[in-house]
Amino acid sequence: MSGRRPEALIITVNYRGAPATLKFIESFRRMESRHKGHVIIVDNASNDSSCQVIGEAIEGLENFELMASPVNRGYFGGANWALLQYLGQRERPDWVIICNNDISFHDPLFLVKLFECDPDEAGMLAPAITAELTGIDCNPFLQQRPSRWQIQRYRFWLSHYYLMAFKQRFAPLVRILRHTLRTRKDPLPAGRAAIYAAHGSFMIFSRNFFEQGGFIDDGFFLYAEEFCSAEICCRLGLPVVHDPNLKVSHLAHQTVGRYLSRPIFRYQQEGFAYALEKYLMETPPWDAPSRETGVSATTSGAE
Image 1 (tube, helix red, strand yellow):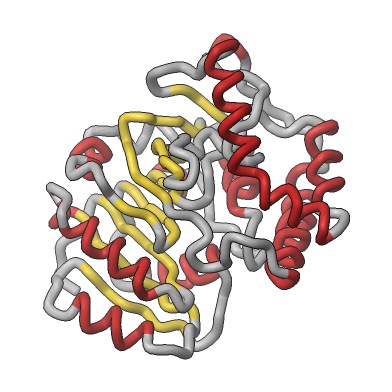
Image 2 (cartoon, helix red, strand yellow; image 1 turned 60 degrees about the horizontal axis):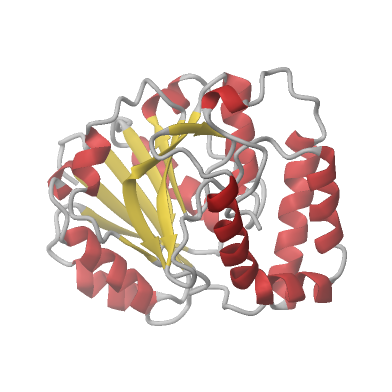
């Protein structure tokens, strides 16, 4: 690695998904100001040809790095493992992005627009993440902290495998219908707006988030990153800002599959239980986002 401090560190996690990771690499290479970023690809013990394929694809590319984990650490576990190794040798950049490997940068000006943002003004940024399956922005994941009723609803869906399998099967159709009804009745603000939680497929952490005591909570394997990161920002008094000017696309379920498996269901249960016990059962000592900030109590990508 060179001595230059990048303005953005992008960490993506690969698990037996080399084709998607190659598309991610190619889309990043088409962006302007890419020389100001550094990309770490974490291979989470794929035990297939992923490391060889990805290694050959990034060979000779100065701002790409492959880190092979000897064990599968999960999503945030793999990302945090790479981040700590990186910070052991380099200064912290203005922005740290943790994202899925099935993300594509279709906007060549994404980094240019990101670098125009002030890292001192927010704890996290939530870009517009267009789900290729629905064509809808996955953000906000949640506009407000979940109510007791919403928590009970999460518990209900996660109480049995077949309930969650049914929900996941029809979630895209429900999301499209809900989005259509909501935009007619109560459209989201067109510009930047404070929200509670960003979607976990692409999360942008500011330098200020870490300087104020924020950290990547990797005490779970999967499916708790949205709640945990949102709660850390709340405790630090740092806003999470949805910025639709920053755009990426997401071809979801490339690693875990479109249909729910029992191991993935267990990870969902364990992730939510972790977030619930550590964060969500506590009465918030902060002011939740209100209508005055342009946000409402409805959900978006979480459903």
